[in-house]
Amino acid sequence: MEHDSVWLGPLRGPVRWAMIGCSALTLLLCSYLILGQILGYSDAGMYEMIRPKNKPLITATLIALTLSLLLTSIYLSDRRGSIEIEPTGPFDILSLICGRLAMIGILLTVLVMFYEVVARYIFEKPTLWANELSLWIAGFIFLLAGLYAMQQRSHIRIYVIYDIMPRWMQKLADCLTVLFIWIFTICMIWGGYNEARDKIFRMETFGTAWDPPLPSTMKVGILVIISLVSIQALSNLIADWNKEPDHHSPLDEIDETEIENIKATLGEEPKNG
Image (cartoon, rainbow, N blue to C red; front, side, top):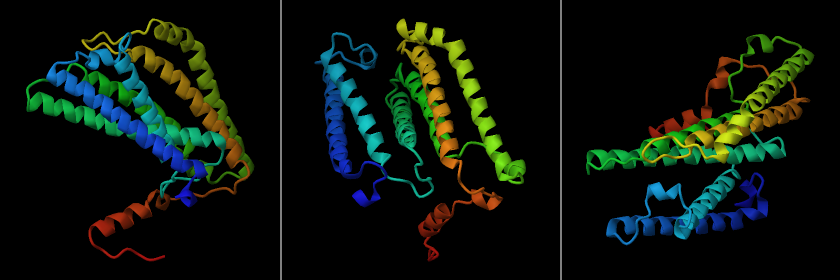
């Protein structure tokens, strides 16, 4: 429904249908590859999935999967959760999309580990790739979740001293915080750029049987996402500059929506108003 749209507006419908189409195509191609492994008419497995050179079907599957994840993240970012804050700037949209991608990554990690448990303990055919793939996904979940936490202002903050400061001193503290984040980011890029460039150019791998390019992609991912976190911190500072000072208490940590959902699950009558 367009009235629930956060930022897509009239594009919500087309994005939804594009998401469904790409997801269906991805499922179809993956099913074909899996059946090929079972029935023996294809040798394309997980080892080839990260080495798609001269394999157009695997390349098409990876492209469809990438588009599915991107479109799903965009579509899901267009609806605000009950405990999420309103986006305050254009950069917030990118952070929301990355946050939704991290949420999808959690589901993918669970599916990978579930597959490994079934394959290992029921069929006695453990995989060579499940552990590395789950580590790979989890690493990016951690990074993307940090960006989402910064956008939501849900990172660790200590308010005992902050709340008793006058507003001008709070603004000064916020400026210093953002300054330190940017100094840290610049130092990380300054010290890690050459290594990340060399790793990604030679596609340094993990050194296991499946041998994914985990070190090279993670190194680049760290530098890229920490840069996004710094930009998001600056965006937050600008958006919050003229806000009235907030005062915090332990009651702020109570999620009333979650409590009402628990009561509804237990059969209790939720409060009105």
